[in-house]
Length: 320
Length: 295
Image 1 (cartoon, each protein chain N blue to C red):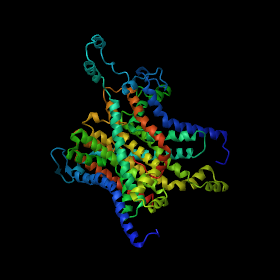
Image 2 (cartoon, chains in turn purple, red):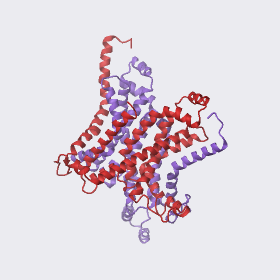
Image 3 (cartoon, helix red, strand yellow):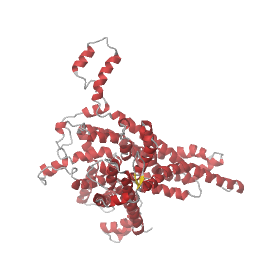
Image 4 (spheres, chains in turn orange, purple):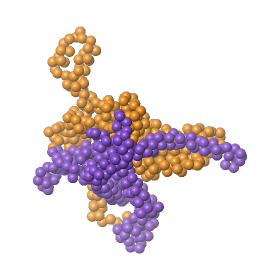
């Protein structure tokens, strides 16, 4: 590094960097490109669409879809009968709308958002208490708890899937929509809990104990110091862990595929996309647009917390 | 601490124990109830003919025997081993090269470093379709290059469609998806290496390779072997990255999934499979920790 690099070597080096970047982002470019292409353009290997097609996005986000599938004669009829009430008109239009409803993206998006958002929140709250306990307090059994959390890394989803499914069916949780949703919520919380505990534990250890001690001498209780000192001081880390947990839940497919089988209304985005892909409505531009819209929130969140997250992961807080 | 009287410090210690367990209790309870208990329950289920509606019938080791005598099991175990070996070697090598590159100074390094993490953070479900499109026999760019531009193949083939080639696509996909993690871990270790070591090696006239072999390598040995262990554990259990890309690659997790949740839903046999997979993994971990990590 101190040595001067010859021109050839640095050219080779830059070529390598370019190759690495291309390898990493080519599938993303392909995804974006295909989502904007018309069907006749798919076989064209060029990544720039010959003509921009935004139909797929409009369809997914439900923009301008109101009258798309309604036959013209019906529209004419509706326009020419002014004495019909608005409710009646909507009722007639709804008939056509529902048949065009092939992939309710906004609903799946909301399901994923609520499920991941709430599961991550519960996970982080429980993890704050737990991580504080084993990074700050001394008690017998603490090391066992800490090691136990690491142990959980070894278990694959499939090992937990069959027994958990059996239990949930056994107590009748999966026969109602609310029960199914709750079951999945709890499972997602459990899946993200070990990582949250581990990452937060590492973050809390970096806060000097003397600050806390000072507060306690002033008469603050333990809960008081957690609330007024630990949480404010590690807020950015807590947000990082929250978002990381959110991302894990957002990406989850295995449990969703088994638990949500019976409830199409509860499908999360991974479930919905998979169902779309194997259905007869599978069209590349629509699939790619849905993929882009699924990836964008996660990548945007990641960019926001990148610096903290990379630090946290290097300390060993990861889950796959 | 000296400001506290002995008597009050004793109660304080006691209170600390109480508080410690109290705070960690919800987390421990949840992990015990929803991770440890299911594993025990899975072992229990593997001895039964499981029926969701009519209850279980005890069959002893019948499930385990049925599963192990099925040649499909051995084939999927073979696929799993191939998958794990090649993805682990691949992610480690690519991760190492990228980490060495990113440890150098070059323009736009910050941007490049975050772009490299994209495959790792993007949802599996959204990137599998891009990969399927790339390898699509009709529209994909791979067939376009191999058939039309280079003429290596005579006809367009469906690489993801046939099981023998699909496993290799799954391996490349997994390397692409997971090498950023290896890269991150190695980069943070590389940044911690004392620069003086390299200068000393240069004074001794070490070549680039020798510097890597005698300075860098010993420094990253432990972290690399830990990452390899994690990668083997994760990829041995991997489901979604394979199943969502192609259902043709029947590694153990996918095989178990089909056994337990598709068709006749043989949950007892599924449990037995999951248990066998778990035991194989534990065996490997114990061996690896002893031989490679030398704990």
